Image (tube, rainbow, N blue to C red; front, side, top):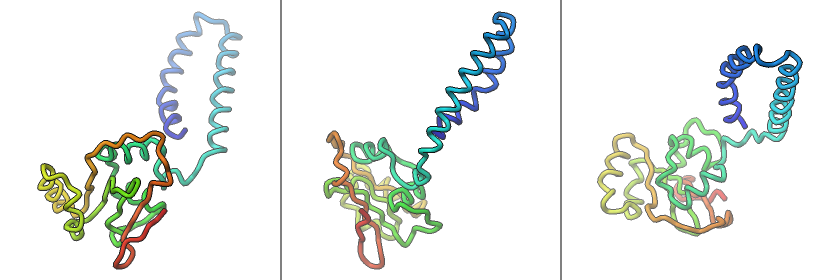
Length: 176
C-alpha cells in the first residue's frame, strides 16, 4: 500500500488540474458528489491497509521475491544490506560477522551473499564461464552475490523447503 500511495500522491497535481478545467462542464453539485465519492474510496482503502500494515515487511522477503529467489535467483539483486537484513530477519548495522549468508531451497543454495574472505568456500557453486567475473567483482567491493544459474520450476513453492544459513562463530547456523 505504501508504494501505491506514493504514486497516488504524484497524481494529485494532475487531478487538481482536471478538476479546475472540469468546472466549466459540470455543475458544482455533481463535482462535489464526484469528489466526495473519490475521497471516501481513497480514505477507506488507505485506512484498511494502514490498520493491517505489517511493520516488519522491510525485514522479510515478500512472496514475489521468494519466488524469484527460488526460480531464478540471479534476477533478485537488492543492495547487499537489504538482502542480509531480509534473510536474517532483523536490522543490522554490521552484518559482516554473519557472512556468508546462504539462501537455500530443498537443500540447494540458490543465492549466497559472501565477502572475499570466504569466497574460496563457494567457488564450486559458480559456473565456470562466470567464475572469473564473479570473483573479481567480489574482490573489488569485498562483498557480493553468488547465484545459482539453474532455473527451478516448482509451483507452488513449499516454504518448508526454504532455509537461510549464516555464519555464527566458526560454523554455519540455520535460521529457519
